[in-house]
Image (cartoon, rainbow, N blue to C red):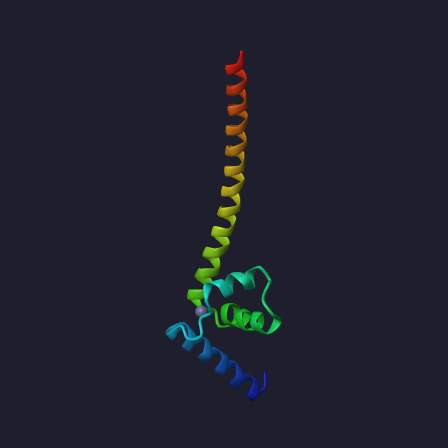
Length: 101
Ligand SMILES: [Zn+2]
């Protein structure tokens, strides 16, 4: 590694540290979500990629983790609700059919 590269590396490290300590330029959670979903413009997604993966901002990493967890839970939850709705509907149908007898 050349001296210049080392300096750049050092700079990146320092920048990451500043971000970690001050939470400078932390993107809004909505942006993090858009980034995770891949719906961000390339320039913006590069920035988030750097912020979260290179600078390893713990705040944003936590937000991303939380979004991923909640995203999964929300999907599971809606599947569960759909199931519940279906079983309610079918038991209602059975109930109504029984009433007519
Ligand atoms: Zn951040």
